[in-house]
Amino acid sequence: MIWIHGGGFMSGSGTSRDYSFEDLVRHDVIIVSVNYRLGAFGFFCLDSADVPGNQGLKDQVLALKWIKENIEAFGGDTSKITLFGESAGGVAVELHLLTEQEKFFNRAIIQSGSVFIPGAITKPDNSIPIRMASRLGFETDNFVEAIAFLADQDPLLVVEATKSDGPVTLTDATFGSFTACIENEYNGVYRFLANAPENIDPKKLRNIPVIYGVNDHEMLILHAFISPEQYEQPAIRNYMNIAFDLKENEIEEDVTHFYIADEPFNPEVFDKFINFASNYLFNYPVERSLKKILSAGNEDIYYYVFSYDGGRNVMKKHLGITAPGAAHADELGYLLAVDLQPGELVAEEDQLVIDRITTLWTNFAKFGNPTPETSDLLPVVWSPVTASRRPFLEIGADFGLKSRPFHDRMAFWDLFYKLYGKLERIH
Image (cartoon, rainbow, N blue to C red; front, side):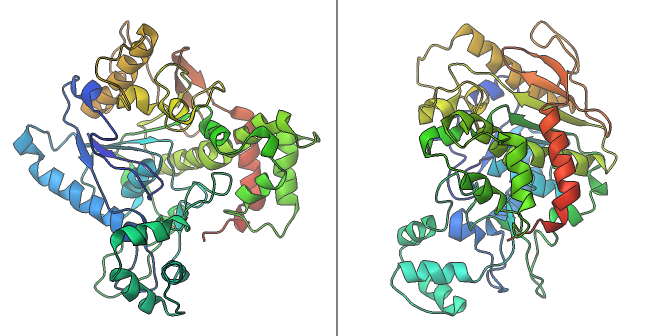
């Protein structure tokens, strides 16, 4: 099982500083964790054969190839390689699925990630290194000169200069300027991503089992960045503007009316705004991913919603959030033992969730099926999704198979994209 860490392509690592894999390896699997270049070093995407984009993703390709060629020396099985990742790591996993490159893995798990997340895929932008150079005191309107200047600077200064090109707050975007991009074509230069995801033919994915999933209240993390009292009407517009041309006012009006109705903008509607942000940035993009991969005829696609709210919800714990629900990345506290202190006692109900999610993930890695048989621990069969059915496994205090998560809101976004999908743009 190969872990691709998240962090918006700007931060994070796959090291033991950030994750522990002890709860997974006790299920007799091998875990390989990958580091890759981040920020400007990994995701400058320019109109240049020297800096074409996706350097960090190309690092991952080299790592996957090395693992495929060498894992048998560590006792691994090259016919059972599972790529899994969360958030930007999940976006990366799906990009490895969709691109034309050779597949060095056999299964994939995509946690709270989708190539359809607004802002996740960009186009070349030569203005970014010019802005960064200016922050470090070098003025030019030539991006080649700016890159040459940045290359001579202390890397830590370059990292500092990238921060202003990241998301200012999570009310503005989930990704900044440094993310995956559609690369321009140059002779002799390998392109990782040549087309927008919606234009990629997914037929080659027919025989690759995939688990997709989200947490039930992804954008609860907003509580750590803005208070309900600071919430203002333009917040919805800021989000919609990430991916849509808002010259047609009815776009914003339709979304606002559906989520907020005619209520005045005040702290009481903040939870509704969080629902909007969760649906727009995570839940519906994952629904689009499901439709994309199902169109290939893939019959081994599983969908989950993580809803458990306990003592190991790592993101809420880290950010001091007390609102109910599972926020973005909260499942990692049960899967990868994030922030677990030596000797720390784990509550019995939390341990049950740890045992369940790690068993599901490792069953999938071994068999391509998360529930090859039922047991006291896993008393239900996790059925795959189809073009007409959306069964999902709820992983929470209530553990079981249900149908069509967020149904009314997903139906709204289906209609929304039929009406306005043509106005969606990539930066």
